[in-house]
Image 1 (cartoon, rainbow, N blue to C red):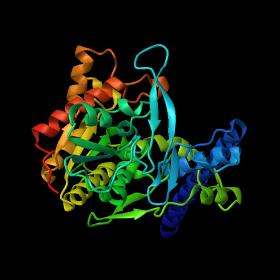
Image 2: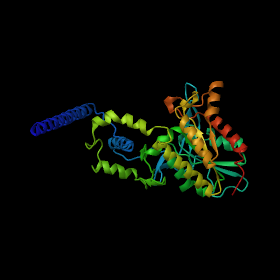
Image 3: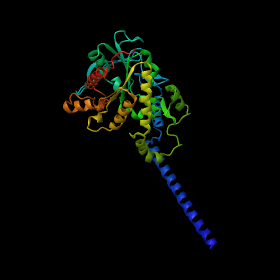
Image 4: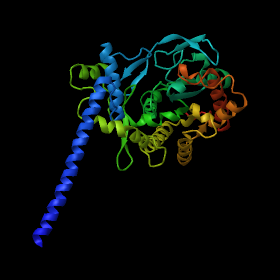
Length: 391
């Protein structure tokens, strides 16, 4: 009887081993097949690590071109990753709903990396309220001439007794924008600091490479943030690592098959817009940090929501993030302006000229969009009495 039980146990064990071995063999064959297809088509799966995927893409392009350059509108910054190139100037052609582009002026950056054709003293003028803006390409005004972006319109059309310094940098995440204020913006001693939060920046705060290498905050168990990938390595350093073989693109140390199967589901987890999502926890921390850092200087902070194109519909993909941000801002006593409602109202009542530029040329805010932002923002600043000078 005992021998029979042992035989049954051994038989079950063999079956388990057989199933495991069979599974491993099938997986290995599938992995080899996937790698062969990738080799033939030269199409490789991205790794789970989105930072690494972006870095590989950057490295592949630059190795092919045999250069470590950054586009000439930007320059490397060891603390931010990149910033606007000092003394940059070029002509800009805008569509604004027309079939052909029209020359409308210049994109110009001064020697202080500020989006402007003039220089600024560190001390605010004694008779003016100084506002400072940080943000990404929507605040910068990509492909819109200097005099047609909302910071300039706000300055010259609505708030003549104020001046607006635009320190926005295209492609940046909210983390870089908060650092921009802390590292470079404070010295200008503004009375109001505006962070232009474009809702799709939500996921940029989860990576250390997006377009180029960048710093990133990670949270410990107590919710305190720590910077990683800081200082940021230079383009030449990253290029040399791949050129000399110290790093390799699509190295064999991860499974192509599992990445093909599970990368998209994993990305959806990262992009979740709930209170327990990694992206929201970081964004909440950044709102806290921004509010505290600005108030410590005696200035007034303002969180400005810049909606995405899909927000023009009655229900946008990022409405949940906006709602959670508004609730967090209320808890922090952080002035909060959401432009979603005025954007939707304009789109329904008079959609031409459009708020956004055509998708084929980037889809950012048009001159009309910038005018609308300036108008609503000026009203809000005056209604909330944020233009009252505190320092």
